[in-house]
Length: 118
Image (cartoon, rainbow, N blue to C red; front, side):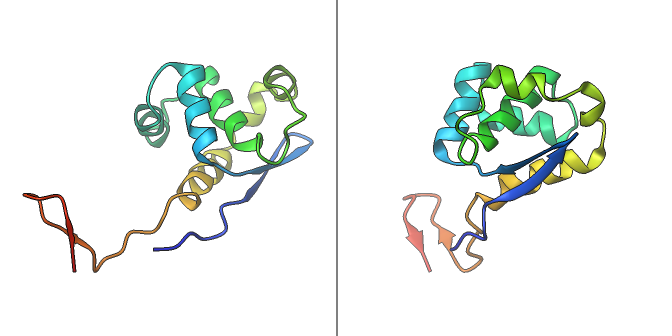
């Protein structure tokens, strides 16, 4: 079970950012929005994120490579029209998936014990 390169570059308006999602990024999303990442990512997959949620998810991803940028500065650098591009949602989803381990198709879990069997 391995990870591919978790870094993804995105361009929003005149700015280019590198996204990387870590455990800290995910807890940042939960802290900022008050709900689990599972709920947030489910909304994202359905195209139902609010602007506030989208900003929180994007900012959590840029924080690793752009630690000097504040949440407010990041939000002020983006015009709502920059977010209409469907490619951004695709890049964001790809960045999140890249940070997750690939499933091992040979790995089986025994439902009764919870122990991994091969």
